[in-house]
Figure 1 (cartoon, helix red, strand yellow):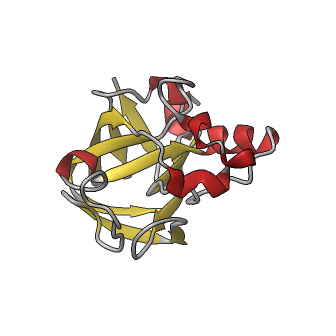
Figure 2: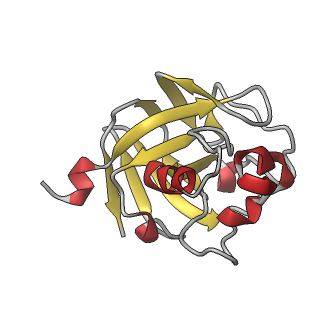
Length: 158
């Protein structure tokens, strides 16, 4: 079995604005993101180029091992991804989620103070793309909408 076939959606997360985002069993994905999700500050979050925020379960577990109180959804990602080599999830990469949804990574996210409670000594720069490349969340645009479910397979197209 290849790494790509093991990759899957570990958790789907949404909120009525802000963090933490809470888990859902499934969700509809549109050009503007999850229909169940809202952003508090739409100047820096949301929109077609930042429709979804993704992060790695393996990175979350490693951050927990460092002593950070982070957990899936606590830093605002919509999709917590497991089994994918996170260093390959870069701007321009495409991800097929299940049988319907196709995403394209648009950018790395810049962390803000709203996620500080997920980090020891509130040092949210631990997921800064400048200070810690490969340890940040990514934004993605939706190329093909549809529905996602926990456990859906993910294929990375680079």
